[in-house]
Length: 168
Image (cartoon, rainbow, N blue to C red; front, side, top):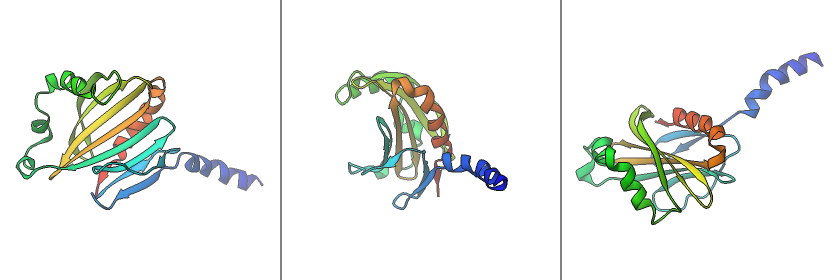
């Protein structure tokens, strides 16, 4: 009995926090789907992956760039980062309720230079983290969204998700 309890206590955390690995056969990248998220139907011609957990979601969009942009770096495609936020916010008003652009920066995703930014929307109050990176002729956009009042909880999940994103 003690031996069973010991084995269960050692392996129980692995089952509780286990992640599901998913591989995109179309675009050759892999991700870990966080615990509790369920893969759902990806709607839209460029949406490659979508998973949800109540109001939280993970959406990955992959667009093929026109040939004249293939040689550009992600920073050249984005333009002036100083004006990106206000321009994004202005354009997002057509599609979102009260979009607010908060902050942006540079990081890596799957060993590629990546631009990130955070924003919120209202009705419902959601907070999103967006990553954009480029590999070859493809632009990858990953949007991680959760209820605004749960961002502190989800921020570590989003960090792990970003850290486990890999191009094969």
